Length: 173
Image (cartoon, rainbow, N blue to C red; front, top):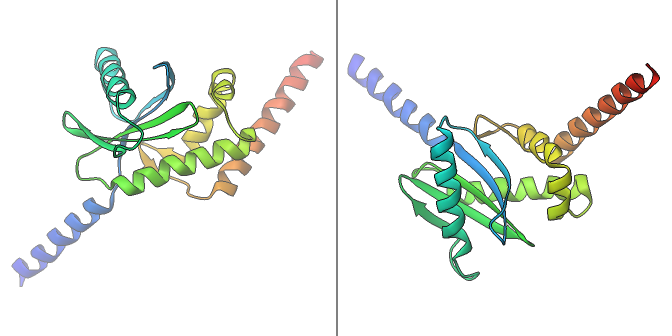
């Protein structure tokens, strides 16, 4: 009986591990190869991060538009999607779901579009902190935290209102 129970719990643990979806990093890169946003969910040295950004950017930019949006890089999978002049690039574990990752990228772009009103590269350059805030509302530790676009936008709007209040109070001093 113990073997059966331990076998069930083991398969249950394996099933739970398969359901977890962990993004290692998110990069936003222009067509010219400029990094506009880099968010890391795994610990790496600055040297490793720089190498990954350089290598992955080069790999993605060299691909033709009709090619698959999934590619392998070392011991990870790179999932990317181009929106206008920006490439949204993620690195995931080899056993993670590529289509789910594409959906997460798309959800991020939808929230950025709603927040900025048709987001463009300049919005991300001049308001990069907002892009990070939005990403932080969607993902925590590389896992989807909030899937509701309305909830994310409401939280970001509340944060903007609080910052405005603080700025007004500072101006009065």
